[in-house]
Amino acid sequence: MPRILPALVLLLASTAPIWAEPIAGKDAKKALFAPVVAEVDILPEAELPADMATALVMVGEAQPYYGAVAIAPEEGLMSEATVAAANFHDTSAAGSAALAECNGKKKTATDCVIAAYIRPKGWAEPAFALSSDATAAFARYDRKSGAFAISKATGAFGMGQGEGAVDAALAACQAMNDKATDCALVIQN
Image 1 (cartoon, helix red, strand yellow):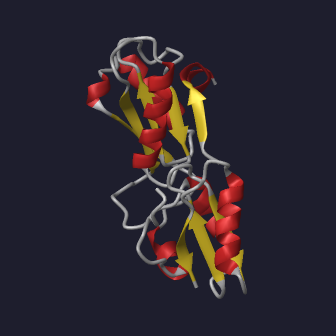
Image 2 (tube, one colour):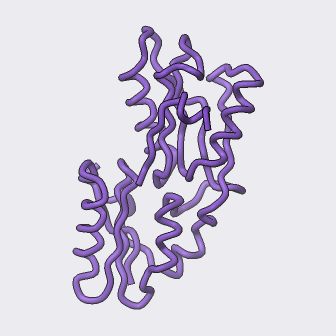
Image 3 (cartoon, one colour):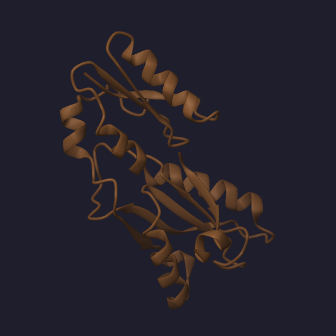
């Protein structure tokens, strides 16, 4: 389930299918990163001081990928407007979620910016990607008669197997998050 966390907590401790055609489980397995280790890419436009960037990296590495951290530039990293959106299927969706929530919380006029992206360790632009939790769940995927659906907007996902696998995967995806109205089939055997 995607996590959207306020910065203080964080620092203190489409309706269209995403891919035109689902891919086979063996191809998905080859494309996925290990679901355990993340790295943080601090973006220069956030203009974070070195100590804040270091703190963000330390906290961000413990978050599930794919994620993004948005800040209100005039309020700084330690404001209530800072939002981390984690466990999405790509950084674009995580960034959209973080920016939307940050802009809703900020008290200043300047729009929020992305301060960092959270990606799998050793990340390179993938042709296919799943969130950290979905990647871990993929270990249980039935490569004979399975189906796997995801919501790009929310990070939700679902699996099905056997007869009715597609419908089961789509229903499980939608049941994971009430806002998952864009669930689409991405893996099918």
